[in-house]
Image 1 (cartoon, rainbow, N blue to C red):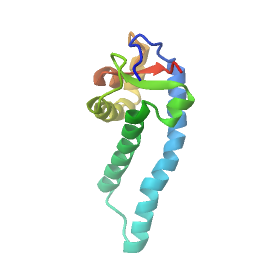
Image 2 (image 1 turned 45 degrees about the vertical axis):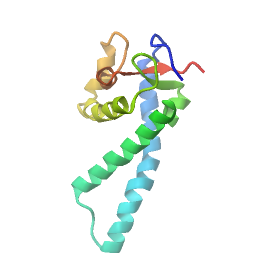
Image 3 (image 1 turned 120 degrees about the vertical axis):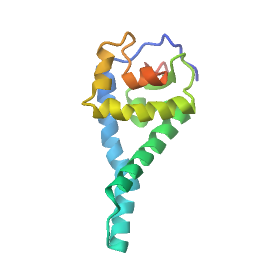
Length: 143
């Protein structure tokens, strides 16, 4: 489903609220896909996985979660709730390369005290820095 590149971007407040909602949903995803397997493995083997392996597991699980949902229909559950969609800068569905780049760039964008998020305050289209760099944008869902 192509969206006009001139589609209205949702407000920054709406995107931040969606991110908070997404964080709560991710607690369930991570509990099931990361904590449970590592807990069972630890009980069975009597040892915990090294920290680097645990972080890699979290990184991969979140990549699969976001990548699959963004590729499927451009929305996570939180984005559906707040009526937003991820598209490429030209309004077409994002490519796999753009999705991977957006995901990887979102980490430093968030972990740098949110500087990539604050970028939206100065961006001409009110897009986050990782969206600008990946050639993607969040738009209001026109459904």
